[in-house]
Image (cartoon, rainbow, N blue to C red; front, side, top):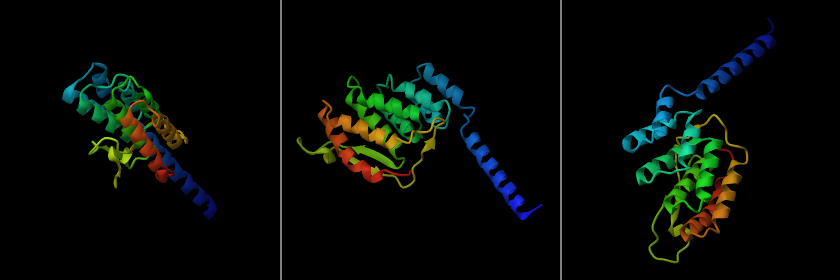
Length: 204
């Protein structure tokens, strides 16, 4: 067997192993169906929190189940934050669409829309997180309402439906729309983020 042929076969084997690894990583675990069923049965409290956290590890069914929650976001503040964190961690085009709709929906309360922006930041770049704060006095700019933090070890997970190549531009376009929102806080925060995010654009 020639050296060239052996090299070719070795390369083909490595590609096959890599493909198999990706395929296995894109499969749901045994915990995914029970977690999804919990959400469908209107789980609350700790049961809801566990289901959301479990679904982060479900690349196939997780994004769809989490996306459905954004149509009727939880009233509980802790549950909403857990949903936002999960939606920022599991990066998938279905969650990008769901968080976009929730952020732009003016009938949602402010807290829901700000949490949806958090999720969009995770879809934009896995290391980014917005830390919201109350301004010391009225009339200040966006920097008084939000701090953009960069995590050293982001815990992002790919979903089964990859983000489109335009994902970062899509998030920026949403924030540009929100920069003229009727809600002053959302308007100021979005305008600030529009100015900051371009420096994070690129491979992630």
